Length: 583
Ligand SMILES: [Zn+2]
Image 1 (cartoon, rainbow, N blue to C red):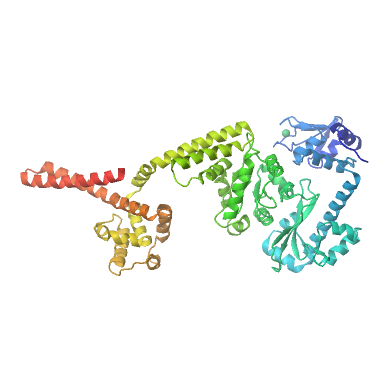
Image 2: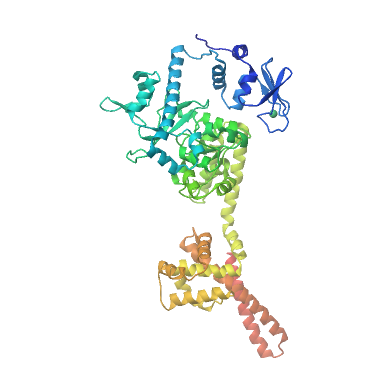
């Protein structure tokens, strides 16, 4: 039977003839009969008293709470986030309808492929239990058995076993060879593609096995992970690994996180973060983007915390632009340097991950970072380049409203950026003046330990400094002796020597990173001079105040003249310091 261009009405008609809507929906929602219809708790919004109605007579459902309603196809598209075509296929399987889009031979071929993979998946799963080494290996990686069974992790044994199993199920060798479970080698011999590998079944959006991922556990293959090859039924761009297994949690929490690999998805599930899916590869297709938006208005992307991961994130961010519409976006979670989700959860827990989720940044901010990277120097030429990039990236967004908003957003960012360039000196001054005396004193210690060379040029000035904090004063003295008397001229040596003695080495180390990290030698010098004057200023000011009082209270003219001259010198010095700061 070949039917093309079948209408929705025809499909629904056939469905209603052969089945009932309540039968379909009660697979997913608990329904109770009331009069001619059924009621239950709405699966599309949270409710305590049921207001979800199903009428077999009309073939329609309706929720009086959230006003969602429709027919059997609408239900499947909404509830299972299926495309129209997928929903029709699902419906036809459920009710045994014969709805064909393609020729019967094609359908038969596809059906055969699906069923071979389905059987093979069962076989792999059973084989894991039988293979001690594989089972031991998976248990060393995944502690929770429910996770292993939920993800249907399996093992592929030697070739003959799989072939025997499938033959027993009624498939002949030719059919088996058509799948990519067997591949031909140079000598024209077929061998098992996944043999001796741990198996992760891959499901399509209709939750059918369409392929496998295999991980080497012997370390005798150069390739750690392999995937099934793309086929008529297995298209990487139409897969989100983990969506089937995490569906419930993703749907309920309206949260979905894209990660790079299977193990990331599985590790996260094991740590109760059941929102992860993986695209097979580091690209993202339109289908995958739209699919993720079906579940959440703002899905997350959490790629590896390395250069490659960051580059992939950027590439995907640019790709997403094209599809943006009002109310839909993406956010990016930044993992600690050199961690992927799998290794992250070996070291940290969900609580820390939640913090990272809270700190995740918006797509618009990431694109701004990409734009900003083109600025090498804050000169007019590069500012002009900024303008061009802003136009380029905003115009990638096809939706006019969103595109205009992005343009405005970037222009504002640009203006802030240019303004910051101009006022950077001034800003630095304000920040540094706010730094408290004790922090200034600690910063001197930081310079002692980490910037030994620079300190050598200021030994005289440092010898005159007297710290207010007694502990710091002692440390400063001992460091001063090390440099001045023992003549230690090497940072590393000084770090080693002081590490054990300094009770606050961690704090000093942190101060170094936050205040000196990223500064060049010239900037470090300026910063150091500023700290010196910051430390000197309060002393000078209080000495000036003291002199002022003495001048007023002295009757002796000569003495007064002497005090005034001293006072003027201090004022000059204060003025010079302040002028220097204002430069
Ligand atoms: Zn509802």
